Image (cartoon, rainbow over all chains, first blue to last red; front, top):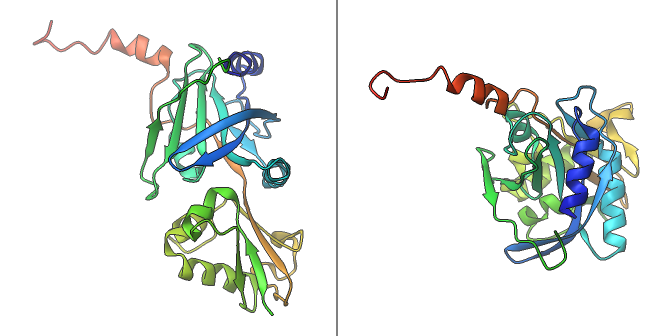
Length: 131
Length: 117
């Protein structure tokens, strides 16, 4: 999964790539089962945007499979895998956000705090065969 | 008989896991306000500090984007209607407050404190 994500990130550069994380939530853990690439609708290379219509369709597809949209991923072509001010402004705390550093290939996972003040980094554990 | 407000999975933790909430509010805007009043922690994610719906929040009334309706948030809600809240997702490194890797490499050479050497 991560190898595919890095390939997608490289192919999209210098633009950002993006997509949905589909999986299950269980207590304090979120298991991502699959990644669904989504066309980036942003007008510039340093942003990503997934329209609500697409999110709505993704939510329905996931629900049909007994899963949830648990978050989204996007790449940062020229900066680290850390959330930007723009990421902070537009995030929702119920989703996790996977950010890929397109240059170094680092992948880090973040969740917005309930008070919207900042992101908290979440540890990422790779299940057998997931890398 | 009331209408239903359906929530995306990302906001359900603020409604104790409920995917939909019944409402008897007369219009869409009132239904959203009522929802926020009943679930106060949800409010800051739907509305900004000015009390306006956040830009990423899209609201549908029976599959119609409320922005496309003549009366928008003032559109009347009837029994059996479904109000659906869906976020659009956006962000990216644009307008980032941090330095890019190239900038860090470039400026690291210039940030040298005399006391350190």
